[in-house]
Length: 457
Image 1 (cartoon, helix red, strand yellow):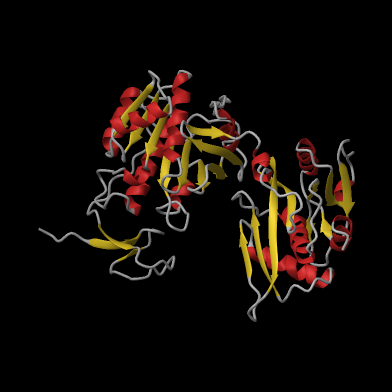
Image 2: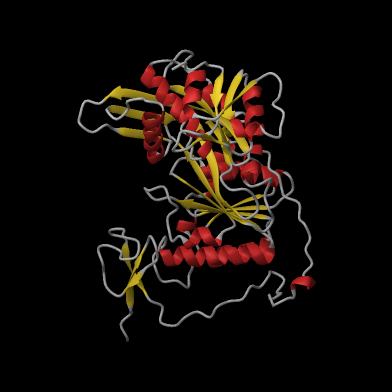
């Protein structure tokens, strides 16, 4: 009998090598090469066949009949927002997050809501037994006659049951625990994940079944498995948050049916996840009134304006090289703005340690947050507090100018709704629209002018 041929496959990027390597030459990761048996005969590629037996074939674009299907809305408005307005039938949605963050809880609640509206839901779990899932469902008050639990890891059995039941929605928890019987590698390997995801995509597209797939994440925060996993699905959602806090953030990083970088805020309680309709109040509720080094920014997360407090602590450096530390903000952006403040506003910051963070655990990365970061640094350095009813929006250039930003009307309206009396915006953004009454919109053109008006320095 011939000896089985083996290859060593990187579990991070799927690079294959005939011998073991400590470091993958493709992605540079260490200790990711795992031995896998090479199948001697290649499996013939299967074409897309629907449950009714119809094969796919080439068609002229003008002959294809397109029917605009209505999105299915859940009872969670935050989830609908992140998905672009609701669930698209026949889509493949990947949800990733740290262990214990609430992925299974979210999908079990969504399954209960979808089944309560008449949809047939099949919840497939490879990590828990049916009594364990039932125990969580009782705690979440999820009870429906259209919700089926199926603890299984074999993809052949899962596909057979899907073809027999014809559900409207399928939940796979998780893709790393599923096993394709035709692949000889271990469960959770690159080959298994790629094969299972490909089969799920074929089921979703040929039968019009919406499939939710749970994906584990690595210690670096990326979804485990090959990067092709994210390319194959329609939507990629990341469920983020600190296990020591109750708030969770659902972020869309890929969406073929809506906007990316959308944000949904949830609160984890005893009875499950509850949506937070106004996250700006949460990010601002613990702000001290006369604290220095604090500035409020109106940031756009997708299509939603959110007010976030940017905090800075500037202290004299003890060692020779000044520290630059940031949380929720780009460290390079902070260093750039400090250089602009030193050059254009005459603030001696080269011998000062700088510690900055975006309060509430949110991550900010758009250009419009520049002005708030600069004001918080100057406020801490001068030990002068900003007005508690002021907020700041604008991009700061290297010459100290304040450049225009997008969607200024929504930002100003959100600041007014939360009771702010004055907002500093780029002067060029005031052209072509009339500011609303009830809030003082101050147009500024330079960083030095903004420091004079806001801090009187």
